[in-house]
Length: 187
Image (cartoon, rainbow, N blue to C red; front, side, top):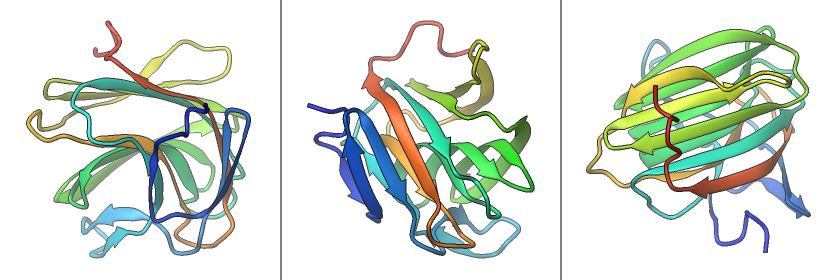
């Protein structure tokens, strides 16, 4: 059994699994965004996700071929097209750590990360809080984002990838796991 067994696709891309690794190739003009600054709504990105959950910690290791503007991959928590959080690596001139929190309208933060071969991501949902942590090779976990997430709304969690400017962004995910919230994972 792989960590990908029993998960569900939203906007299924070209994909394959080998051992514990999921490889995904995006379709063109795929993204998740709602209104802010750009004025459009996009809900076409690819997500492989669990069923609805309340509190959890999800982790994954991501490696992508980031080349075109807004190529992105990571973890996503989602309750509806208007209520979600995505976090990972996004190409904006260079690789950036990125998080978007959406409650009807999207907000976005980025931080340059250089060119690491892989990035590990961890999302913890506990009560009304969602914590996004990142670990680069040879470093400890660090906080990327701490956000409010309505505690009464179940959410799915999984891996996502998008490429608004092109088709063919290739990304692989490994070490994916979802379990009980880790103690100390919230700041």
